[in-house]
Length: 277
Ligand SMILES: [Zn+2]
Ligand SMILES: [Zn+2]
Image (cartoon, rainbow, N blue to C red; front, side):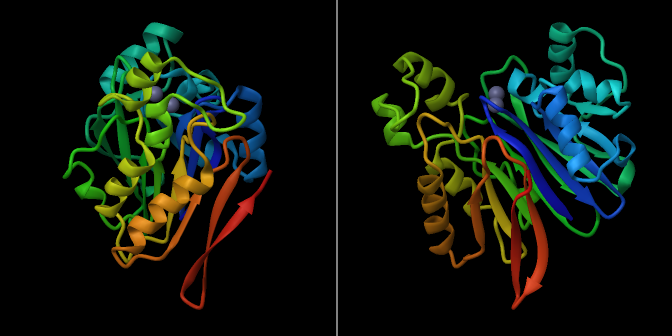
């Protein structure tokens, strides 16, 4: 199994690709149509290779390219409330399928939707995806993760997890250098609240309950470009996991470049590929 990030921020959108032994799955499609076409081509994927697009929730940075997904004939899978919210905003979409909890998909994939709290009308959800040989957990856009929420995905091979903001910075309201200032009420409602986004600390806590010796890599996603820094997010999560004896690879996904994992056992370690585009 390989995991690719096509883009990963609220500005650039969120789109991930999980490639199994018998097909590929998109998770969210926040890419523009042009970007999605370019990325699929660069990964050597035809639309017919993509067994489905799982949608975490209806915010525009996760569904910007969903019309192209539908036009390409790629089946769209979402919880009923997300489907309703997407159709209300975008109009009827062909190739839609309701995902209630665990569903078997083409390509030998089984996807489990795990509801999360978020300020979208439809909330959000994590996806635990397996192809029978390996597994990937995608957790993004969640205000908090109650303790046992992700238990069913413990030991996932790859974990893509939101690390949106540095809590101290977001609470102070002062962005990092080069970042845009946001009013405190926006930060309170959209980032810090129980329906906002995961801070680096919250990501570290959630990951400590999911990551095991089976986990090859932790990929931090949806970093705020204003109230977070990749090195801070990685350091926070790495230190937390190291204190529990896990010293695998932790990296922050770039907002606007394709990035992928390549698993190869070199002295027992996974190797991650760098930027592809
Ligand atoms: Zn988002
Ligand atoms: Zn969102």
